[in-house]
Length: 216
Image (cartoon, rainbow, N blue to C red; front, side):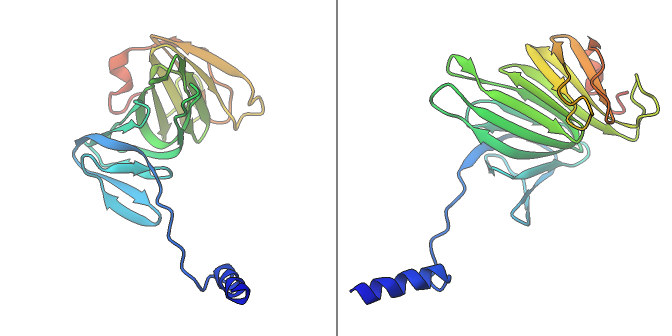
């Protein structure tokens, strides 16, 4: 018996015995789809369809003229505009009223309607290549724009815009030498984050403008 057990352990260590794969739990699903979108998962490219489960580390990409809404397990809704790429990096909804979600917006525009977890809102962050927008239970949009001059810094042609419909969003730039500096953006305002500079002071914004093709 003992020899048999030791042999089993050695075979398991060397990988000679196949062990069942642990399935990744879905963190949400596709609840709205307009046009065409794809999902990159573990080296594969899948066509997005309604009710499709979304897993952690999935990258969802929308085509031109298309859009997708992902509803996370905790109720948060992510709406991807056309030509947008988002990675669901981390989503945790806990029963102790403490949750955490991190999204990576690689390009395009993402609207997030963040649900509360119990009485306390979960921590929710949208990361772009040069900004972090952090909030608790609110409604806001983030766009990452390349190839167009930032309004406050025309020599910078790579920037993030954060506009708030409801609540407060704290915006910082982790690539700036002053990475701890942040501005708080309230409802009806927006803030731009140019290149590797600190976020600019919030200013009023038109809700209809942020979603307009060629904005700024």
